[in-house]
Image 1 (cartoon, rainbow, N blue to C red):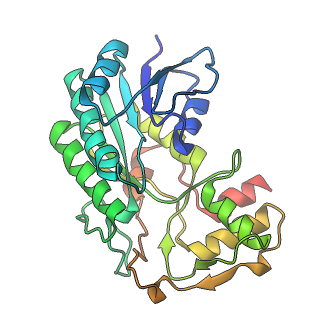
Image 2: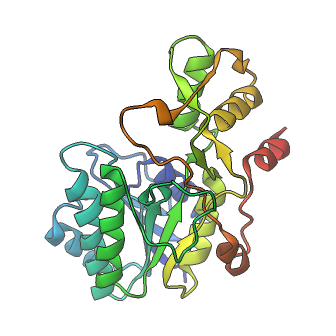
Length: 282
């Protein structure tokens, strides 16, 4: 019997990858958007506003999923707290009520990024951005409502079909369509969207509870990441300039590298670095 999988943010970048890969599950994709992709034989759709706790509870009670993967968020705007923070609490509360396994997606930007060493699962959040603070609040709400949940901290997500927005941004700079620079002093552990999606599905069938870092194996600056991807996609990165986020008037997290050793021991899925992914595509 196929497990029942409920995915919030089903029209988002990670959500779409999960839906594409989850062929072995009976899936309900949820999205705030009124227009959904055409359903495949294993995927149904439901509209869902995670700001509404009654609507969240009704959707989960009706579908009765075995596993919930909560990917829905916004990064800025007036609904940042209501969706990214409080909405996560609503999903966690409903998942706990029906005893569903919950995978909650968090972020590396819950950290200030002002130290040299990578962050581990034991490091407490110390966000310096509104988005980071919303994600940190979400972690606290999820842990309180659903102690058995896995809280996954990840990094920049990239992919090729379709191209992610970070890579598209770098391509537009390389093409001369933008005059922006990519920061050479901001470090992350970018992860290939398919690697992340497979890892999350695998994690969903474990009983791991608490924080787990799932990020790529390679620490790269935004500048290094952008130039590597642009070149791999057949374009010249010569027009991409390097800039320093330290020069900006607003503080940004700079070294948000995550150590994913615990996930590598727990999961069969290989969490590849960017250069390894590109080498295997060529």
